[in-house]
Image 1: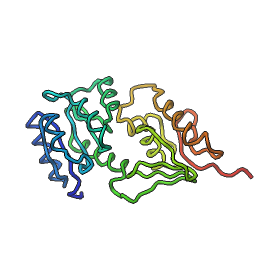
Image 2: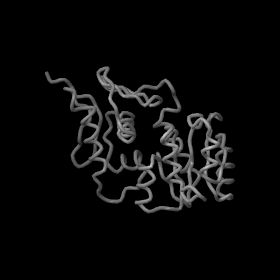
Image 3: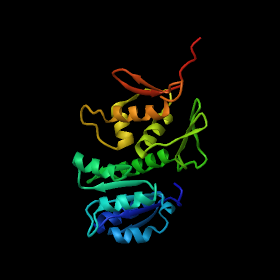
Image 4: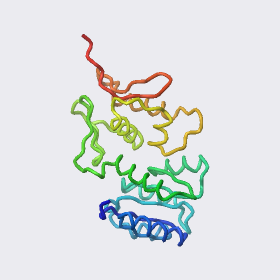
Amino acid sequence: MDSTQRVLVVEDDPLIARYLELELGHIGFAVQTVEDAETALDRMGDPDSWSAVILDLMLPGRDGLELCSAIRAVSQVPIIILTARGQTPDKVRGLDAGADDYLTKPFAIEELVARLKAVFRRRGQGGPGEVLRAADLTLNPATREVHRGGAPIHLTKKEFDLLEFLLRNERLVVRREHILSRVWGLEYEGSSNLVDVYIRYLRAKVDDPFPSKLIHTVRGVGYVLREEAPVP
């Protein structure tokens, strides 16, 4: 683990904060802990100098959701919410506020580390020069720029995350519940059309204006991103 990966932990429980500082520090992260939102904003300075923020929701004073929105307004730094609030509406509000993932307490440190690494992979922090490609489509995880046929495509945060996930699994059929878990961080709870809705949004920008389609439906299973074979 690169020690330059700096993690800000915003947690008002001193035992949990100390536990995270020790465990993540042992792995190799450079960890700083604060106990409230105002101190967190002061400590961040340049938000993009941080690799990730681990954020509790139930903070003294300013609510964690407000802090999440404030950070997201100025930075794309990965944010993982770590909280005792485990109901689906809480998770939805956290993700809508701009969080990349959501983990409920009690938690296993191994799962938190795995989610951190997954966020880093999605954001391309492991390779700043990395560019994902399929046919004439390119996606740069570091700059969050997308082009097709040389023309820029403007995506929302979740559209970008969904496209990146599909590109990293190019030619593999991915199930809806897998997409929901990896892109939204939600535990799958029965039928949901959330993935279908965002696939439709994505197709309208990435596929519909172009003659060759890349995002395909595998009926009854999920979706796959692959280049269509030319028609003879």
